[in-house]
Structure formats: structure tokens, C-alpha cells
Image (cartoon, rainbow, N blue to C red; front, side, top):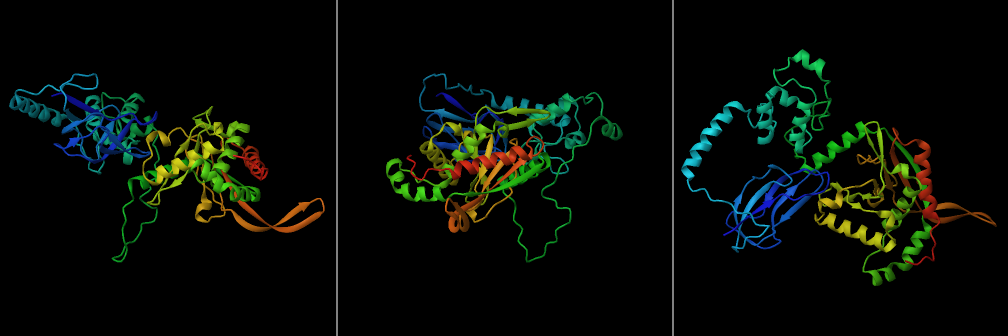
Length: 438
């Protein structure tokens, strides 16, 4: 029978590796076409890998918690057909198993005598690939522990160790401690899990381990604050016309489109329009260079059942009408709550909007979603007394109002641009036609 290699699929342009979190099938289990066989996690999203063939799972090549590169074979499925197709890879059976085991044993003894251990004395884990590179290039355990890892849980990846070697390290001889300090500047890292003041714990306290996603979010938030000079602007918006319009059309909208119309798609449209008018908000910073993004891809912060947040992305948001925007917003929100987002759903964002008003907050000061340079927070819509100007004079009336908060990177976005941007959003929302069609 033919054997099929299950490979780790590509999961977005910036995702190079993933962690095996759970095998859904065991060796010997039957596999159906498109049936999920393994759960994986990247630093962006959790996902499942479906089978491309029917057959029997005969081999699992990576254990749970292993970090696997895109394109690596992670399992072998024995197909039910003998047909030889371009998708099936013949796996030649080893005829002399005992001889192979002896050779492998001898090789492992030689390798282990020269390589560093999988786990260092400080508890850091190093993959076989990283250890082999370190051994080949003469990188000591001491040097390896000094490398700042960019992988899961700050693990050192292949790119990290290669970058360390290519940066000018002398691989012929160990570098002395004083020479190290002169040769390479120290990288200062913030340890999220270790507060400056030690935390005292008594017998009545409960210790809760942070989730994998919680650790990643904490790391990204600290990194963003250390990277961008955060500045905030606030503005109050009268959304009375939008509230009245939604109340008038929501039943008709649902009957025609099968979707519930909320305020979010309307706000997203206003943000996309403002970005077209002020494109220097839609940028990223790369060292001393500014990358001006052509596409307007709006990130939409969504709460997960476990309390964490994820940011799915509405691609080319400026090209969507209100119906299209509503379907995109609702679809991403449903998939986020169900844990069904694909890696592509959270890739490529150029600007982010978060709805703090959904939790009752009047306004907030959100942290920028790197490598973007700005983020908008939508406050709660409230009924408030307000001064209403008319040709006959001013009077007090009840209006629906909200605050929007704009956090932006003051390295590249000045106060004038940050303020004009949210003023444009305010004007767009307040000009909403209460008799508009959809």
C-alpha cells in the first residue's frame, strides 16, 4: 500500500513554524478525507490540520509541544489505494531493522558526545536543529543561553542562532566574558513573569498558570509599549442618527440579508474612509524606514470565551459596502468565539479597532497592535443631555453620544494627524443620513 506524508501546511506569509498541541488521532486509527488529525498553535492562532487522504495513521513523527517548521512531515498515513499519485509518497520499508538500529545507536552516541543537551541547566529547551547548528558552529551552551529567542516561550529558533552566527561572532574560539561585552551590546528583556518586588504567597492563595495565549499577549503588550511612543487623542461623537436608523431598519436588514446589523460595521466603514483620506495612519515602521500600506486591512479586536483577545482582520475594508462589511464583521466574530479562525483570518492587519464600550467602558487607552502605528477604541453609546443648536436658538435635549479614543505612535504620527483623523471619523458618523438605504 502507498504511504502519504502529512506535512505542516503554510499558515500565512509571516508564519514559519507551529507547535503541536494535541494529536486527535492515534497510530492505528482510521482517517477520513478532510478529518482533523492534529491541533497546532502559532503565536497568532490555534488551528487543526485536516487529512488530504483516507487511510490509516501508521506513524506520528512529532510529539506534543514539539515546534515544527512549515513543510515538515509530521505523520504518515497508509492509504487504502495502491494508486501512485503525485500526492502520495512511497515510504520504503527497512528490511534490516536490527542493523539500522545498531547503526543509529552508534551514531547517536557519537552525536550526543559532541552536542549540547536538549534542556539547559536554567531550564531552556533547544530543538534538535538548533543543537545541531550549535555543535557544528562551535556555539557553547553559555553562548546559546545568551541568545534572545523569538520562538514560542522565547525559544531559540533556527533563524535566531543563524543571525547570531552571521552577526560577526568568532566561531573558531570561545569569546571571553569581557570580550563579549565589548563585541556585542546586551539585549535588555523584560521578564513578564517576574515582578520587580517579589510576590508573597500564603496557603490561602491560589496560583494560576498563565495560558499559552496569555503569555504571548503579555509579551506583545510589553513589547509594544517599549517600541512605540504612545499618545492618545479623544473626541465625543453624536451618533443619534445612527441609533435611530438602526432601530428603523434592523428587522428589514435581517429579513433581507440574514444578518444582524450592529453599530460596528458602520463604525468600521467610517474608519476605512478616514484612512483613505489620511493614508499616513496606515503605515508601519521598519527601523528608520516607513512602510506605507496600500491595502486597508482593519483588525477587529474580539473577546474569546476564556477572556483573552484575538484580532481577526477585515481585508480591503475600504472596498466593502455596508452589507459586505456586516457579513465580514459577523462572520469573523462568530468564528473567533467558536475558535474556528484560520491563520489567514488574523494576518495582514494595517489598523486596529477595539470596542471597549462592549464592556461598559466610556473610553479606553488601547495599546498599539505592532507593527501598526495606531489603534482606535470605541466607547459605550450612552443617552446624555446635550446642547442642541438650531436656527431658533439653543436648547437641551437627549442625545446618543460616545467617545472614541485614538492611540498612536508619536515617533511617526504627530498630534495634528492623530487629531484630524478622529475628527474625520466624527464628522462622517454625525453626517449619517437617517433615511439612508442599505
